[in-house]
Image (cartoon, rainbow, N blue to C red; front, side, top):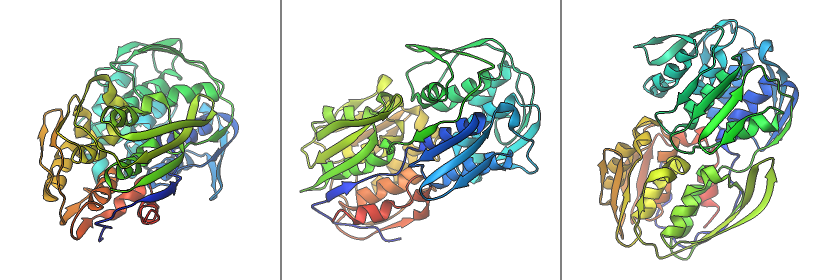
Length: 424
């Protein structure tokens, strides 16, 4: 499709869709709880709808309307052996967390996804789960499709070799089915929505800095979940407001969980005009209003323990850096290689087509600032965040930008292009 290009003066208010991570987990915990769970502001993106489809296939009744999702929870033992292979579509969150959930059930299940999922490594999840006694049969040992042979699980103490909320959450779901206490030690602090939701649904989990302890045998009770807006979706408008001249954008009801707000810290370090006003909270999930204005930015170094707090925002942060004064270095971000695509290679390739001077490294990128962007034909690689980043880049371009596979954005933000158009 042809993207919106050569714009100035983006002004207005946006309410981005519900948080993807919280939406996934609300269905998972709602299904595993006893009683009714109601979810409002659920992300109606393809990834989260895949999670609903998986639990319906496991025998859980889930009613979907534009206003709310209603999950009739059956408890852990209420899940049923699926009649067919479970299909997660493009959702890495769904497949990795489901491996932990299915590992301790009393039945076998096969789970698969699309061509992108088939290339994404599952060994990082299966290895620790196997240490708990889980049994998997997988293509080439570590790739989907995966057959999960349900069995009794053991507790363990496990130090995560990578900073991954998906791996951590899969282990937590498995630990909730084991007898006794499991200890997980994080490499760096990662998003903690699973831990927060355990508490919201009436469970217990102990978190002491990077050490997490969780006991098996817990039961959950159905809840009312209000999903805040997704800061990873808001990030595209944060960057647009900062780099497009004469712009001021207000983003309402954005989740500002401290494990997710690395982009705000980066913008502040680069000298961007950004304000954050906390407006509400559901449990320990705070939300607020973020306002950004066109700014003179400076290049910085981004690395270390902030990376897990902004890993999904790094493609659009690379674009942000291209408009700053000086050089920006992104490092310690090897996780970018195992997302929907290798995002280091994809960002470098596509932004280079538009005239940005940047190079990829083993663990990140080096971006030169104050770049003028021009038209090109670019592609999303089927990666929603790549597609959205390239639309924001096109706003700076001096001629037409054509995006291949633009429909990928529907994974997390079905109305993204309309919301961009509403600002000018």
